Length: 185
Image 1 (cartoon, rainbow, N blue to C red):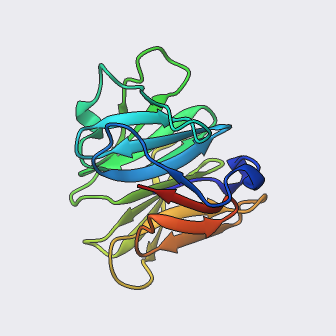
Image 2: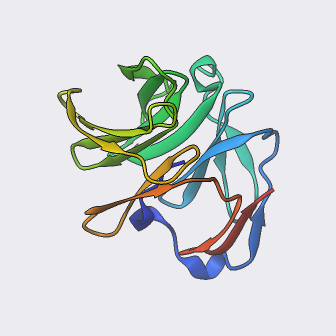
Image 3: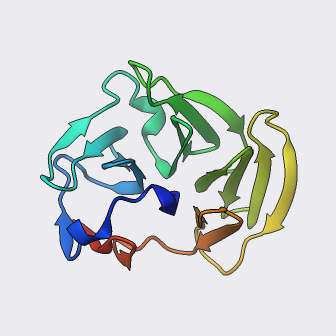
């Protein structure tokens, strides 16, 4: 799961809010895009737009859902949606009419999370115990770090200068943060 914290709406409207996306079976990625909340249902391959004020849920990828099956990471940067699924990292244009995913990179082992900061793509792999850093434009490996802790890594870029990368070792369905308490049920 990935998100840029600077894109989170005003927290005063979300204090103690529980969001129940219709038709979602297994959410493995959550990210804000302006005022809307996007989530990926990795079991069905649905990319969902959830209105956090009304709980209305809209399916965004009716034509290209296959690549989203098994998705575990989600990030948005510069109008591009990024996600990891199996051994692939995909990107697709959020402004496009069909949200057709394109392969950014392929790996020997399954990847778990993706985060974007400026021209840098961070990709986590639990099996290898690494965080790989790629150039967004060049698609070339820039650096490799060992993953901290144990378990599946989810990664987030935080802060206005986005100089720090946070690795989360588990997904928290109920979280308290800039939105107050936000719960997905």
